[in-house]
Image (tube, rainbow, N blue to C red; front, top):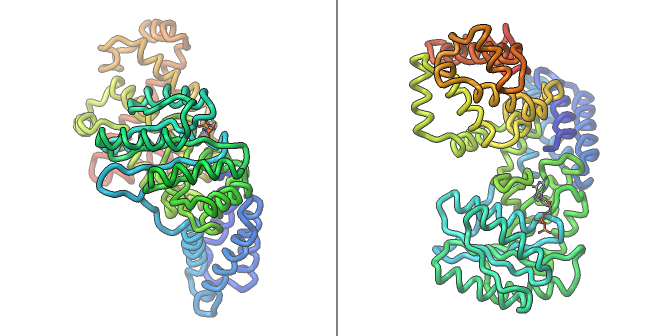
Length: 450
Ligand code: GDP
């Protein structure tokens, strides 16, 4: 996400963060680079201009510039300004006690149908009851797509084919949701390839007929400045309560998305970060700012971990680590849980400091080959070998390699990595362990092979 912008801003930030005492021309140079990075990432030029002007206003002044922590101060102000540009606070869905309707609107191809299902899944996972309504009565294929996806996430779909009006399907679907006592009814409406009167009239009519608590525009972040214009048009015509920015996993022109709230005043509530149905995140301006400045996002990482790891299994694991009985079977379970958390590249982006070494790691290779290979090697072991890897000698190693379609060297490498991870875990759970672990890491490198 925002790789180019992150790389550039991280470089600027790193060059200044440890500097004490700055001159006015240091500041001017830094701000020029920040502004260039924003413009290159397609951030709206007015937003970029006021962004740097505001930083300048806050850092100029003899007292700040001559302090020993002037550099850090600039970093802090830049971070705060970025949070402000992104909308300052994360904004929850507007919700009444029961039977809330969410109208999902957007242009064709923006990811509206996918996002409707992602949101349904997200709300369901958080323990709320949800139904979907197929109100795109112009495209039978859209109803089909919604039907397949809603089955996948186990959410009820109300549909009435293509012969009725969108307003009637929406009204009936919402009523059906009320009868079923759903907390949320998500209505997927039709799109167009561009904003037109006919579409807006249809949406106005639907809005009148269900009186939704939320009208969410789904915007493709890859469309650059055009996404800001589309948001403004929809807002002027039907009134929006929030945005979902999709395709934030791509890099190109994503900067427009950064300025969308500043320009339109509409808060971003969620972001789509991949094609998978679980690739939707709540939008937190402070966390995104931190990611963009290369400082990671530990909170989102922790939330993802919590959602993907079984709590009982975690407690069990903790005990095993303490008693040093962590085995290859556990290693396999952990790898699978990590995979459930999302793409490795996206996870690593959330690790503080990682952005600096991002270029050095081939995350596709890590994801595609490394994990698959490790998994198949462990699958080819007997239960005894998994719990006592030390019994694996030459002939067992050859048999495992043959069974998993790998080489004995690959098996050896995995066993060594496992030993290192086990040692790291043991270190970590002993007094003063974290420092010890960092020492092991700095001496031996990363045990996962990068
Ligand atoms: P609609 O016409 O607005 O309903 O768009 P769809 O929901 O059919 O999505 C259009 C395409 O965008 C599909 O191929 C989706 O898989 C893809 N898509 C949707 N959201 C995302 C996202 O967050 N990231 C990526 N990479 N693709 C997405």
